[in-house]
Length: 98
Image 1 (cartoon, rainbow, N blue to C red):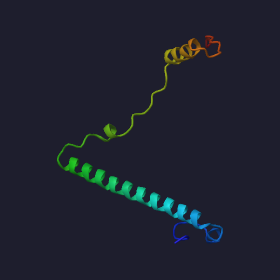
Image 2 (image 1 turned 180 degrees about the vertical axis):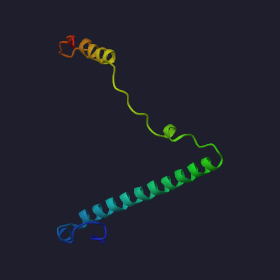
Image 3 (image 1 turned 135 degrees about the vertical axis):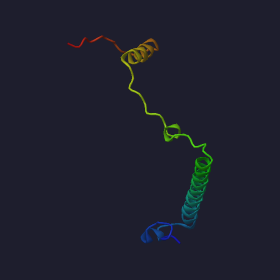
Image 4 (image 1 turned 135 degrees about the horizontal axis):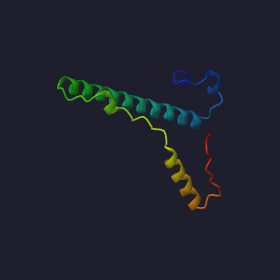
């Protein structure tokens, strides 16, 4: 069981009964979590298939996280001024590009 759980055979002989038990409980919890994740994924896949078949599936971009937009210079300045007003020791200067 020790090797089947992914541990080195040589490490087995270094374990106390308590450490062995803790390691096996950790493996068991990991396997339970993986099983739940797989069940959740199967359920979500079935839900998407059902939504697609009923014509209720939204475009893919609806389900994905939106891409983060680059911060505008005025937003950067506002954030820096907020840090400065909060007591951050900084000097803010405007640099003109040529």
